[in-house]
Amino acid sequence: MTELLKLLAYQLGILAKLKTLIAEETQALHQRDADLLMNLAKDKLQCLNELQMNDTKLANHSENKLLSTEASLIEKVAQTKALLKECQDNNKQNASLIELNIASLNRFSQALQVSRNATSLTYNDKGKTSTISSLGDGYKA
View 1 (spheres, helix red, strand yellow):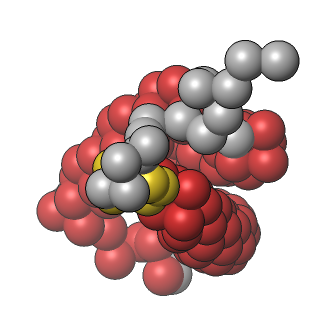
View 2: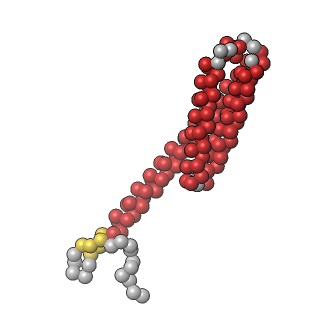
View 3: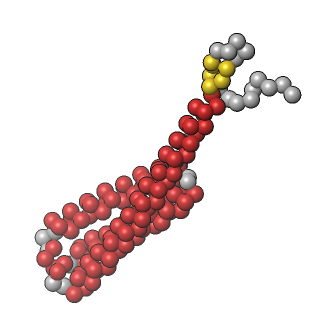
């Protein structure tokens, strides 16, 4: 039973770290810090892999039936499930925030495209059309 307690304690530790990473991810999304987001994504993936490996150890443990019969283990399992649910909910909120940021960037990109295309076609001194890379470079005041 002590091995099961150790595995559950380790699981809680991983989940606590994951919750912190998700909170940092939320801040990075608000600050639009792409480098930090990339690092956090790697750390989250590592946490999720550790979580899955530990979960497999718990599932394959010879005394895993005690997880649903022993009072102290039932309490730890409940804590673990509650923390996992919290992580999942926070991660869903971040996913929504990511989708909003992507939509905002797409609208901005489209606005830049329209602006560039609207100002890039002009006529030269012979009446021929030409494209210019930036507006107003030919003016001499």
